[in-house]
Image 1 (cartoon, rainbow, N blue to C red):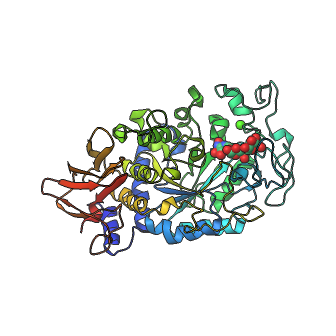
Image 2: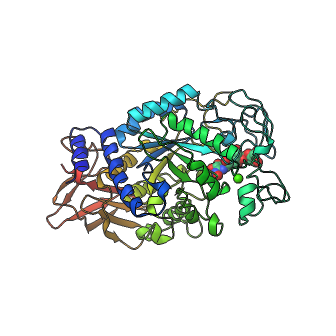
Image 3: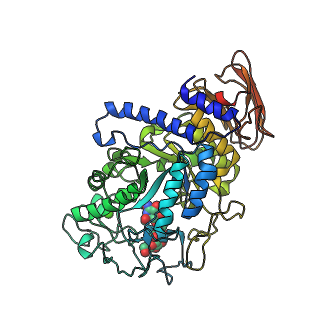
Amino acid sequence: MDRNLVRIRRLRSRAVKPTALAAAAAVAAGLSLWVAASASGTESHRDRMDVPGVTANLFEWNWPSVARECKSTLGPDGYTGVQVAPPADSVKRTSLGNGSDTILHPWWEVYQPVDYNLTSRMGTEAQFRSMVSTCRKAGVKVYVDAVINHMTGQGDTSYGGKTFTHFTYPGIYADADFHHQGTGPDQCPSASGGIEDFNNVHQVFTCELVGLADLDTSSPRVQSTLAAYLNKLIGYGVSGFRVDAAKHIGQTDLDAVYSRLHRTKDGLRPYWALEVFGGSPGILSPQAFTTSGNVLGLDGVKQIRDAFKSYTTDHVGSIATLQAFGGVSGLTPSDRTLSFVTNHDTERNGDALNYKDGARFILANEWLLADGYGSPQIFSGFTWTTSDDSPPSDGNGLILDADCTSGLWTCTHRDTGIVGMVGWHNVVGSAARANFWTDGDNIIAFSKGSRGWAAFNNGPAAQSITVQTGLARGRYCDVVSGVPTRSGCAAGSTAVVVDAQGRASVTVGAYGAVAIDRASRR
Ligand code: LAG
Ligand code: CA
């Protein structure tokens, strides 16, 4: 039994959930793998890049709420990282924009930066800083959504009280720092000045995305301004970035910015997860951006949706298809991918399952944690009716404290089954998948070496199966129904008996999962 596992087991047997220590051990295990992989790789800038482990994406949680959650929940539950919303000062709408929008402070205000001072809807710069330090102390690293392709597309005042116009942001950028319509190499060639053809590389890089002022990221001045912003965050203890609209910056400019970044507080290169929507050819594809960093698993999101619930045909799907998922099903390589069931865009645009899918959404998240593809991230946002809805805020757009009892926040990361599977993920580590079993339709089961075994039922009726678990003989507690106590299974949690041949008979509930691991043996 390896050292990490012993630690996790000791923690669980003390009736303590896997904590910062387990989390750190899991990170260290991932890290050594990464270093080994990159030693043989060709891209030197990947050398010792941070590896996030399991992250929670607390979308638009305000900074004091994130800090509290790191300490009370994320760290103790074994999450090793948290992704937070764009912290830069952004537009604060004082009137409705163009078109049909009817909400004064839609969630997307934060994707329209105005200034790199961190006065935002989520709090002050001091609150941000203190959140990062609280989270790090709880064993939870902080990853920031970095909006660096563009500035605002509308409005004239910001949360930080700045006034600006399109192309002029006092103190940071002026007209010459942006791409403009024209025919030169750093100019936008489309008639409208916006991206009209997502297959045209010149337009994708230099034209405006939905009317947002497009930074001339090829300019050394812009690059150093962006790097100064990101380095400030790194200085506060941030471990890496989800790079918004990375597809519209392009590899060359992304690399130029990345090369200016400092090491993180852990002495690593910052994590760099590029947002690149699939659907465009060649160098615009997610695959082609893996030379510049990790990428978001957006194509995987659709495969997961279609496996659990097909939107195109019968609305049933079949998770037996997930026997092949990852590089083998055409996705970017596991060690280059930030994987998730949904994010803030796909939960609204039909590409993904979302919290409204109920048990199936939870099941898909549990499966992702078990599958082990990519660095898994659990998205946890606020509930909404229309796709522009504001997160719970006061009249000025300032976001209120997250409250998991109000029904206004989904709090997906706190779900008992998901928390159990975060622990399971940390226990099984990098063990290879084995003992795959399926009924050929909507039940799958597999082990990770001899460290853990899990079963998933994406059907409306409970099913009993008898299968090879790959685990040693013993009595194990199901971790999906609750983290085991020192002496036994959690209240209401089922025990699974593995016989001398490694076989077990298990009943898996409707749209449910059962999972056991070496640290859940009692
Ligand atoms: C992203 N990744 O590349 C974000 O994940 C996505 O959420 C952002 O769009 C987008 N890129 C720009 O950062 C979101 C909303 C848009 C919104 C935009 C800027 O999905 O709807 O556009 O943020 O706030 C809004 C209006 C547009 C308008 C634009 C500029 O909806 O109609 O043209 O603002 O004024
Ligand atoms: Ca651009």
